[in-house]
Length: 183
Image 1: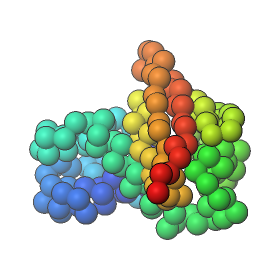
Image 2: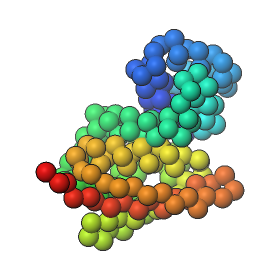
Image 3: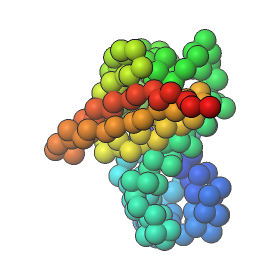
Image 4: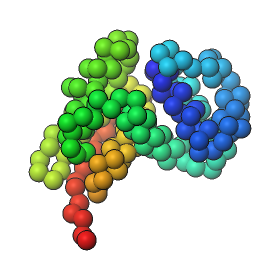
């Protein structure tokens, strides 16, 4: 997993829980990297799982909720770091539709060795089915990215998750439905 993901997680912890909390979870986690991440380095995804677990222990917030929060945070960071991914995109569904065939292609150009999840999407009117597959257990991160995207585009979207994962691989079907805003 690329270092940018780890450094953004540490930034989230520092922002939401404080520098001391970030230092504590890194120290207590006994990580092979010792918590020293570079943006372009590659690290074992289990380090992130360990860090989130320690943060959960200290904060009392469920691991899945923390990973979802991190997904929302990452969407905001991607907006700041990679605004080109959001150009000429007018809504959440259209953005999510670009992940596999636009965003991930550009990421692979920057980081050829990156192991990315796959996002297959199909739109139908006011709904979208987004199929997430990954060798890593981060469907809650994808959920957070989807929520962050809906928030960015100021859209009210119901998100249902059907987890079909097995054997330590994530396979989740997200069903997104746009809700009408009642003024």
